[in-house]
Length: 255
Image (cartoon, rainbow, N blue to C red; front, side):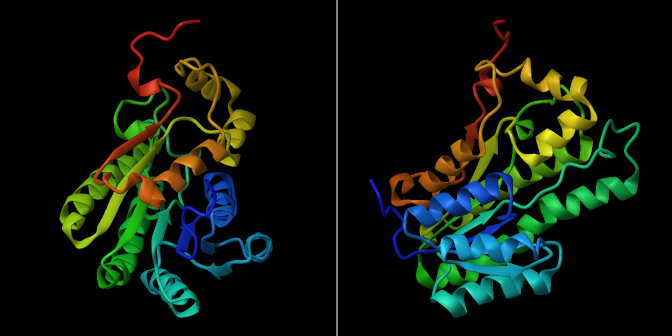
């Protein structure tokens, strides 16, 4: 079925790579007018041209820039119907709590959690005025279970995203705004490939826990984003939407 979100305006942060890029393309394929928010000023205009959308350079930790991103979407296209708040980082200095210093902790919290707060805060007034909208926040499977390889600030930030999404989904359900948390398992993105390159043993420890025996692909996450953005998920809100190859349901993974 094509055109499931025809004519709707979708704002995607972190839209120049990985899950964000795949989602930008998928949403555009289904008729959305896509606004790409990212810090990549080289790639961003190319992605926008590819999908016939708009690129806005944005630091998602800066409230004024985030407000400007959603304002640009509304001023350009007349609405804010979908917000996929996806920007995030997973730096190598975020490790065990014993090794992760306070600066690394704060940097990850700012990008992964505070940015989602800022994006939701910016998107909600438009959606509440319309009495309709879908917010999808990228959390992670580590928000619901302990990670085999510790990334203390990343895990804590994604737990925060999940909890915030649940609360907002409940708070605004009767106002016509749905808020869900997308919880991917390990996905074949530049972040994961960088981890493989820098520490193959650490990365391999992730794969052994996935019942499907492979990492997810960005396009598979994008299909989940499309579903949550569309009316096909009209009775789904405050949800922990796991797309993880079975990792969260496994007790023992078969070899």
